[in-house]
Amino acid sequence: GIFEQMDGPVALVSSEELAFKFAVNNINRNRTLLPNTTLTYDIQRINIYDSFEASRKACDQLSLGVVAIFGPSHSSSSNAVQSICNALEVPHIQVRWKHHPLDNRDSFYANLYPDYSSLSYAILDLVQFLKWKTATVVYDDSTGLIRLQELIMAPSRYNIRLKIRQLPLDTTDTRPLLKEMKRSREFRIIFDCSHIMAAQILKQAQMMGMMTEYYHYIFTTLDLMAINLEPYRFCGVNMTGFRILNVDNPQVATIVEKWSLERQIPQKPDSGLLEGIMTTDAALTYDAVHIVSVSYQHAPQMTVNSLQCHRHKPWRFGGRFMSFIKESHWDGLTGRLCFNRTTGLRTDFDLDIVSLKEDGLQKVGKWSASGGLNITEVPRQNGMNITDSLSNRSLVITTILEEPYVMLKKSDKALVGNDRFEGFCIDLLKELASILGFSYDIHLVQDGKYGFQDDKGQWNGMIKELMEHPILSSLSAVRLGGVSPVTGTGAAVLASHSIALSLSSPSEVTRSLGLESCNSLSGI
Image 1: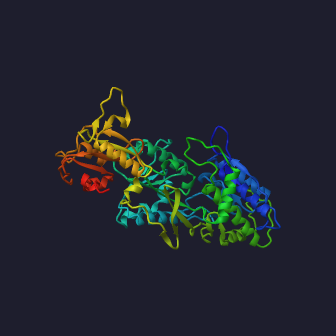
Image 2: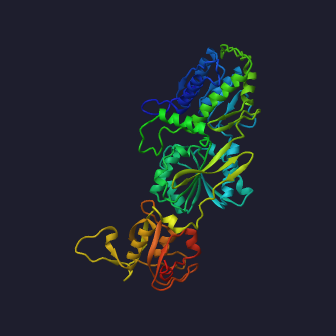
Image 3: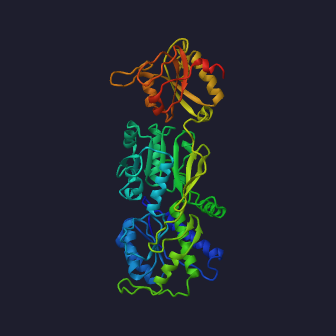
């Protein structure tokens, strides 16, 4: 195997290399797959993107006599090794996403990563199921546009409008981009990036007040489970992703648990990741070793001989062994393993649809190339029970001073926080918080007005805050106050001196600003 060294002060071993050794050792120990054979391997390490070194290492390994070469992962190095393997007819096993042109003539490879075209259909099917009419696609690099081609072409065939944005280059600071999307009221966002980048985006979105029920994020990474989602469980944010690791299978769960136990690494507080989790790349590498072993078991007696890059004399069993690999089937950590016999790509596979719940990341459905999307759990609706939506939440309350509803408490001591206020609304708020199980922080409307619409259609006061939902501590806003009549286009007239507790989405606010009166609450 040829594996890249991870960047850092000290060169780190990649998860693919660890999984490669883990798989070989398991096969040699168990003796069920290859009872009469002991697998041996040669590990070569290169720097990322060093295609010359990758070529040299590949030639070194071929001179030893090998049945296949695994890796490297990154495109330029992988292409260099692929060219050599194709010339000498030795299978090249790939586990990372790679763009294969339609006129690609390389035939001596098998790629275990789900084919990008099929993945693109999975994302499109999910967006259609959610009935999104508008969405923002945020991609990391130009390859994202290839991976998402079916979705990007959707506006020409479906009733959906897309806005395409790119993550900033050479930095993990996405706050300017997030700020722009927040200002433009882009609430349905698809992120195409690594799970490492996704972890940073989520942390910064929380700082920007964008982790609320107003937002729905879809992540295309298959490693959402490797992100520490604990800080976001009770935010109300809608987060959906895909998973190929078949953790529902008890045998898979046992192997994944064993992997994690052998790699108990201290948490890095700023990474936003869960250390020791088996990532998709590691699982695919594990499966790759097994699919080659299965193929070798079923292949007729083969001899392995030394090959020289400068002689261009191919391995005489290479074509036959490559066919065995493409025809093999295996139920691995990543589910059904089979290849397109012509292209060597993995076009038929199953994906779990996962969603963030208060209990953590949960499976809510499944997608397959043959069966399409099957959602087994009805997604959370906007009109969910208010008691469910407020439980364990921390809310920001905006209000206006008006006797006897909300008043500043008179005291000889300097008061801070919620202790500054008293009144009927304050007492009611305390009681509601006790019953419904939420905490809160009160602050006054900045301009001290209920809200009126000017000639340009712009609102001010409490209504403006309700529409823009300014959020402190990354939490959604709730409004409580004695409300005077409000008039204006699209706004319902409110009863004088009524009391309202409202938790609304921006789109709901623009349609109607009607709030529940105190009389309605009296029956609770």
